[in-house]
Amino acid sequence: MPLTTPLTTPITPARDLEYRLSRLDRISTPESFTGPAIFVSGCNRGGTSIVSQLLAAHPEVRSVGRGPFNEGQYIWRRRWRDWSRHRWALPPWRWYLQRDERAATPAAVAFFRNAFAEAMPSPGRMLEKTPANALRLRFINALYPDCYFVHVLRDGRHTTASLIARRVWPTVAPHQWVQAHRIALKDLALLPQERACVVRYEELVADPTRTLEQICRRCRLSWDDSSGEAVLSTARQRLVTVEDRWSRLPSLTRNYALHVIADLQRSLDYPLDL
Image (cartoon, helix red, strand yellow):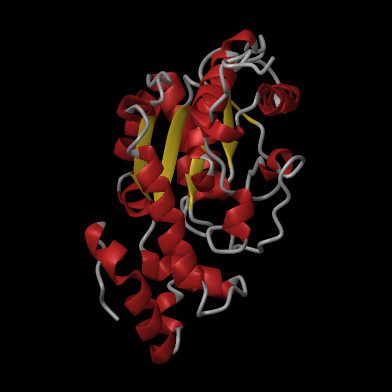
């Protein structure tokens, strides 16, 4: 006798996602986390390293970053390899590396929460910086629903010039800056604004005290004489005048870069001077 009704309700993509996200609460936060995690994102060569290094100087913060750039990319690469060589915001690498809440399966969440917990040097507020976090802000938000985001902006001209100095092709570098920030800013707008902080590298250099205090207060880090001085003393040591690579680029390269970055550069109130 044929069945006239299905034995179970069909599982649609929307219902499956809702079910998987509802299970995330069952995965506990490790005791090494004394407060919400902090994730730093931005375009590579755009100021994320110095921002993470300064935040890591805060007494409450424990960075899981390694190497001279203080990156946690080694953790992400254990599951999602990145062979893009500074081009992760562009196809074909973006197609593989971009993740949202649909990737937050219980297995993926358990894997990354365990990996980050194991990387913690001691109990504290975890800090993880990888520029390519710009591609997975929504995934990170599902991974740690109470975390804070610090997204770093830098003038597209100087970021492009710095990327070129790192041997990224001049025809690719400005597109990397545009796409990294377009993706990140769009996703940040979907997240609770009280947990998102957009920082301009230029403002950090011009007024480190004001900028760092704003970041810390937004991330619910203490800012008193002791903690503030720990961060600011590191800033006095590490914030240096940045080399002007933009003006030394060939005029043809600068004109091409300005053509690519113009719309976003203008919308972010950055200059378009050649």
